[in-house]
Image (tube, rainbow, N blue to C red; front, side):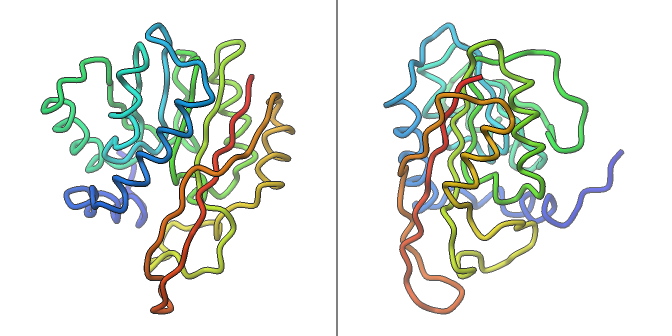
Length: 211
């Protein structure tokens, strides 16, 4: 059994109280930014990586055929399974998976999406190549994350690999991985107090592309 790193332990411990209003609003914004431009339908098989407690997946699942919700945190997945039982969304499957370390699933997906996960990934270029390999022909990505920020967003920087991401960087890495029809759009704005004690608006951007 792998020894969990500090970031996974942090998320395990945070799972029970994760669904705060600010995160619920973020999930709604991200879900809208996926639903509006992409041709979702009830025959599609999708994966979310870094699903957390499934705030985004719970909103997208009614528009999809099957969703495999993955995360490296067992605590987050346990919270999601409780939510699935409560809501009754039988088309969500949970799987503990770290796409940067674990063997990749054999299944291929029509859609892979994430919210606020990329800035926790050290090598985003390698992840983009992994996502490209996991998609069925013509499949799509929809990846939401913080735009570049000044380092005030996180109160605890454990597991934070990037201070947000620049639009140009995301487009370049996705293009190098083989994605086409690329676009970066505004998805949401998180308004909260930063670690400097001041209130900030933190834009969240959405990268979409096709395999």
